Image 1 (cartoon, rainbow, N blue to C red):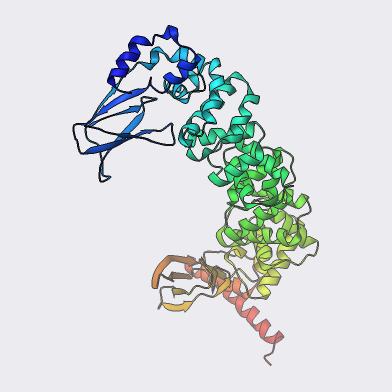
Image 2 (image 1 turned 180 degrees about the vertical axis):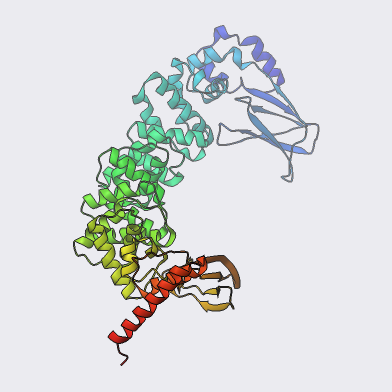
Length: 541
């Protein structure tokens, strides 16, 4: 083929005389271009069509050569005799006008690849496809000369075309032969979702397992995940568990996914609580999940708002006593140490266990005792519990500031009226120093004993009008820091009904402060009388 033959073909080859034989032969000449390069060192050119696997190799004579161009999208690479490649300027001229012959030639020789490539080069996706194009699709996708890249572009467009027409049966052969490796991310995701839509789950799962489930659409992800879970009889699988979690986080799930998550998921406490909430709406068994949430919260201290309902459900389902006690101890401990707001049922359940004679730890008992100290008008049962617990812990010489909140009967019974407490809360096993001065006197320094994990208490006995000024130091990051500075004093007044010698001394101090000589004289006589009585009744051994 050369310029002269091109002119001749234009003259003697009108469309009207075309037949099948001529149409096949014309496929070789209609697409010829002339390539010219002024650099005469160029020996050949490579013509690359992205639609074709193999490049055309064109020999240049006197700077000119001829090649076939089946589309507007091709690349020319020039090479010299030593194999060096260039991008020098060149002239590219089409010798014929294939568009004038294309319709007739495709009618007579539709299997010719050159016609098909030129025809589809003018179409930009499934929106440009026509019904009659269907007979050409398989010729392109099954041709060994067509590149994998072009097939990767064309097949998704063909599938979209038939999907819009609702012809799902026609789609299956294309899905069976498709290779998504050379596709764009959008087309890869589309093919995966179409495999799921046509229930080719195993192949879809292979692709998803290889490329990841994050890019799947929510509906397709739920359908595939549910199928794989049931297909594997709800056996634990880390990949499926991650896929199920991903569906849930995108707020797309069903009962199968929720059942699977309830059985196996162990992740952030807030996520597990959200799964629990969703599962309850589906009336799914959540017992195992509840136990994991409770135990994880106890170790991570990651509190969730639903914990009270989660625990109640776990308890109603026959929760293990070990877990239940750990839960109650956890909240009681933090209430005692940090004044944390806790679920209402905690102390009601501790109280029930105490009244039933169950052995309880210090965290539960001290937390219950502190909670009872907050009740302004306790009933007889609560008073009895408080009495027993105060006896237990004062007997162990364990004192807390909240003891002073109990009523006068308890205060007197356990000799708390003369005691005032400096109480400091911090981490457990710390060195905490107390510097204090009584009534403005010399400062003294001593380490405050830790009476409970993170609670440090020093007790003072003060008469009326006496005070203690103090500051607390704690070693933080290797240095001693003053963390608290206060003053405590005894301003309590006692009336005639007070009968202990401590009460009488308090009255003496009060009368002296008020300059009430009558009260002072009566109180002093009363104290002497009580002191004489004690000496007569009790002898030193």
